[in-house]
Length: 401
Image (cartoon, rainbow, N blue to C red; front, side, top):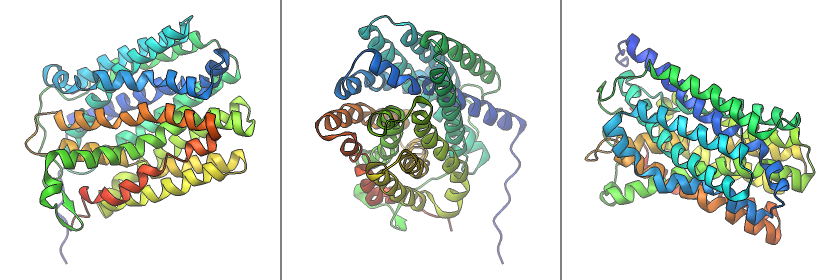
């Protein structure tokens, strides 16, 4: 009976870098999530319709799209970890400005700045995390995204508590931003040195339908497009939980602030569980099978949200969809960063940049449909991309034999 060769234990440098990268992911998740449970108050305070509210909140992803392509050049010049920390500081500054902004246009501008910085942070921390993964020689990228989800749960609970206790928005976001920026600075001391190479890509060749990828799928534009769609399938679920879950429960089911905030917490909490399990599932079953299973859960979960008769049913639906979306973005980013023939950070930047289109399209689309026929119908658009994931998951790595 043959046994798999044992891998050497990771060095102390790698272990420290893994913890530090996890701290950066946690911080990134917690920062923005503090704002999300305050959305109903912002919407009602400004007397916005669903469509108007959707147009306001897309300032964050619009900023991300406009600045996102700068990430690759920044990483090559300053190093992935430095880019992640600097981006964290700028994101925090934008959120503090949202909290204290006295006018709608200033809120939009502050969200734009925060989104611009967040997109660069995202690429930087994922690039650094994949570098650490190469040193480990096995899948650990899902664990970083699990820590991000834990940070998002923490931030969501902080925001829910602040909303329930009527804490002023400006004070709340200032305190939370200072805390998480300090964590990011502390983590930077233990990240990998800029430019350090710790190993080859975890996967050298991508496969489709159990064998080598067909020639047309190996073409970089086609391959990247498939990865973008898979990533967008995950981000559409995240946006539904981020932007609409609290508003949906408040508006459609008359839930109070504390209960309404739990739908977002359920989404990212289930994502956290899915990402904790994601690395062993990926090593055992392959990215492809895990992604297809996740797509099915998204379809089922969001279907329950659309037809759910109670707040509890809706929260369960968001949880199922969150679990299903858990590994989609990490898998797409991992596959992009392993693409041969691309400059460092380029493919990862492209996938990260394009998948954010979902964050721009989703809020106004859901809001417009919600104003026309109700938010239940608006949220019915979310699982559409999951069907695409079922069809295109073959571009991801299958089970290793």
